[in-house]
Image (tube, rainbow, N blue to C red):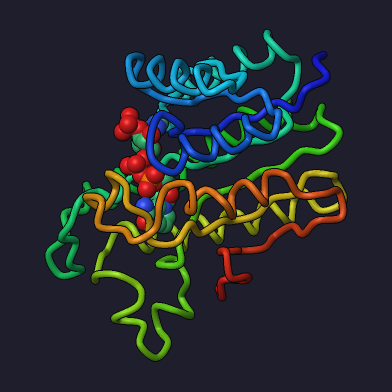
Length: 243
Ligand SMILES: NC(=O)c1ccc[n+]([C@@H]2O[C@H](COP(=O)([O-])OP(=O)(O)OC[C@H]3O[C@@H](n4cnc5c(N)ncnc54)[C@H](OP(=O)(O)O)[C@@H]3O)[C@@H](O)[C@H]2O)c1
């Protein structure tokens, strides 16, 4: 068992996930860079290490059972436990996704990554998280998954384009996260959802208005919560996101 805090960030080779890894590393965490592509993962680990972060690579495709199992074994063999899991990897499935014309295959792909991927990786890592004295799980959601915002005044203009796969996948993720919270009540595992805001990354063709560092801030806060911190919350920088 090592004394340092061990984190795993999925989809950490670029964008917000990379900055979550960098931010946790700057706080002294040892950070597993979960990424599915060998070259992109190696490049991110090298860049983090050059910046002084104790980073290590974790081959991980969140849509693949064997990959998630192997990632858990890698972390177990090396550290014996996991303290923080940030489920950040996500895809939009590409736009447009009009409800009346959408290809169901796009919905399957997005749900497989954004929802089932989170379940798969969380369940693979839970035995290791249970060995931590202060386990934290952060699921990267989006305010577009807020049914309140989608249906409220101005929802059509403040919650992105009409899209059948991506926003509902985040609503699904929110619902799934609450079920984990219910099952894990009474344990020391804090499970929360983060919205990063509209961040300039590959995900949106860099049209976002926030930097990846800004987008990482809420997830980093939730990954480093004190023991009396919240669980079962949905947060952005400004505070609670309505369900
Ligand atoms: N950008 C925004 O405005 C915004 C707003 C709200 C929420 N979010 C959420 O924030 C998270 C990060 O998004 P981002 O904006 O940083 O996007 P990004 O730059 O496109 O990064 C997405 C990351 O997820 C990884 N990924 C995708 N599918 C994967 C899979 N099957 N297995 C493993 N990794 C996979 C990507 O890896 P590859 O490089 O291999 O593709 C990449 O590392 C996502 O969950 C997204 O939904 C973003």
